[in-house]
Length: 224
Image 1: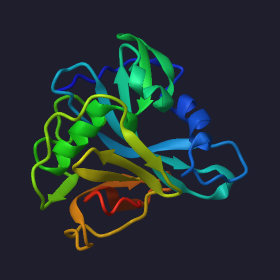
Image 2: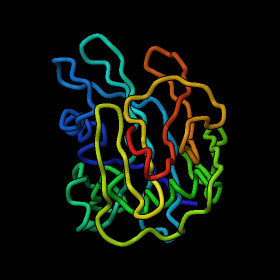
Image 3: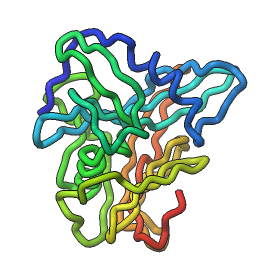
Image 4: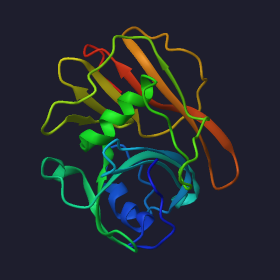
């Protein structure tokens, strides 16, 4: 299990993300500076123990409305050259030193572990405490097994107004929902869908929701 340190980060994650969110095509501008608040999420383990992996839900309350976003993040001790376009920023960790923080769809380690989670080969972990599973994160999968190791190099990524598509060369398209909406938990019924991941979040006003976080589709169904 990955170890989660109870320490400081400077600048903090929310500070970095408040500046980064408006640069995303799926961010719904309110005409005000973003005011993101943590609303949930989970972590995954890197089998090599080198990369921190967090799936964070942020709720932006600026402009008098609430919009929740899924922001997967990877934390590294050195720059990932092929992921420069996905750099959110750097931060000084109180224990680990400088951390390079990436929009996780650009990081092959995070994408590989997300695919493993959808296929039942990995387990979601509590967002804040080490060594505790998060059983509220559920996956459905009905397709051929995918490679354990992704091809090296830059991932092919397409952002839309609602989400992000990550093309797994020659295999499938992993679609992440960025603007979260409450949906049911049932099995996939759309043509070309091989797997889905659902999880919950709680907005600052205390409302609890559950929705689609990610969907695995055949390459012919690439639109998020």
